Image (cartoon, rainbow over the protein chains, first blue to last red):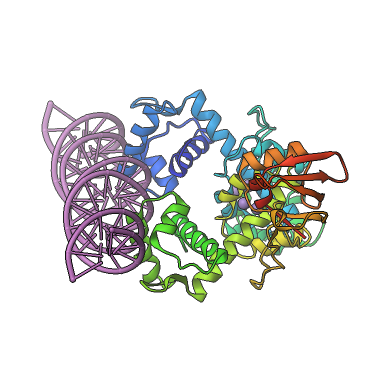
Length: 217
Length: 217
DNA sequence: AATTAAAATTAGTCTTATCTAATTTTAATT
DNA sequence: AATTAAAATTAGATAAGACTAATTTTAATT
Ligand SMILES: [Mn+2]
Ligand SMILES: [Mn+2]
Ligand SMILES: [Mn+2]
Ligand SMILES: [Mn+2]
């Protein structure tokens, strides 16, 4: 139905649309995909013809309802496969994203729904990202960052924003995962470093950047 | 590492090499892939340069040890994914092949081995085809056809040779699967039709073509 | 051996998806 | 308003992988 490239463009546009209410420009898409802006312009033309997106110089790129449906299904498959890879095949959370990037493009009627059922209808993927339901609805998305909470607060890790290997492996080393309890003791005035305890353990200091990439509940 | 097309060529060459000791010609590959012979010649050049195959006008196309390894891994993944789709996701045996054609190209270190372990190290796929082991070795492959046995013999279905939807759905309707017991009562002289009973049930007549596509043990 | 048919190869075309370089349009800044 | 910088677009090139049509090679048959 859609090529691998088309699907990746739609997914990228979807992800950009989730972020802020900034308009989605060719350059933004180019950056997000690591492609040249000229290539993006070509693909915008193609996807517009297929009525998967609309492009208005003022409003930027928008997914049509049709395009949105496609994009959400890809994200759904991506996150479900991530759950599979972690829970059933025993991969670690820093290894699954790249494999899911390939698996998300497997297309077969009812595949996502069967996988969903097999996995017990998980609501969040291993990084805490919400898994779109069969009807396209998203579970509650967490948005409060660890860097935003007040000193003294105790909270739980709900999701990670950065899913790079570097960050995930660091978290693994610190014994931090989804659900881990974190207490914030102090914010260093000089550079906003955070003094925290992990699951009630010893005090540890992490950077502001670190705190920006942990979402809590 | 290898493109989707390259992998499909290697797999096709491997399957042809398994069949008989006929030499593997460009035309044979073209037919098996539904491609034009000219395209095959192009790819033969490419795969030869990559040292995945050797081509000699007299000996035909041969996989190098390197190419063989790649081909076997693809077949391994294909058949393991078929087991997964049937046993874990509940697809029927006529639906899984096409999905596995996509899944077999997913590449990730240790993926096949993890899947193998998760599935309990199955030896045969849902169509009775042997699943290559991690070391590349194949379990015993069945080769005796139902059409070859003598009247009066009782045997069990070990594998199907034709894996088309048409055949598999027909078998589903007849309640025949891997392991089903079949007794041969009579071979009709006129057209070699077979009179059989399925799991000890009533006598049924099936065509010679049918008998050619069931492998028994 | 000559003829014919089939198989293999070459030459050239097409599509998809990418790129670089050049140009035009839009936005920001003096 | 003029200038400058950034963004968007166009033009043209490239690579992979397929195709058709033409040609050459090989095999089969008279
Ligand atoms: Mn991911
Ligand atoms: Mn994720
Ligand atoms: Mn198959
Ligand atoms: Mn099979």
